[in-house]
Length: 175
Image (tube, rainbow, N blue to C red):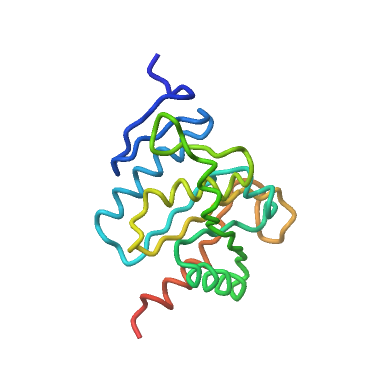
């Protein structure tokens, strides 16, 4: 009786009301509040990793996580750092015209889009909870290795960690 149901309206930490579009997308509701909370500290950089959508895996396959950022230069810099560190990532756009697919008649925003461009609309949903003054990176990753790569076991695996670590060293490391 206490579970989320489609068309429920939830109050978010940021003050936006959210229409539950799909009960299989509950993780983004929790992540949205976490991002809003993190932004209250005004960090120099906010990064989140999530196996948020199957759409990201469909778009780029199982080996390449998707990067979204509210700072396009940052996204492409992280892509380049990832390629240089044998830890590939690839940016997709926060295509603002797709926001229309998340309109709701009963809330400020729907938690899901129209079913098209699922990775992008999920990232746009999250972006709604991020302070635009905070550099933000969202990495939508599969994080599973089917085996077959030398030195990698079958099962859950890290993705994008070497790329992010190298980026952080370059940006924030002592000179």
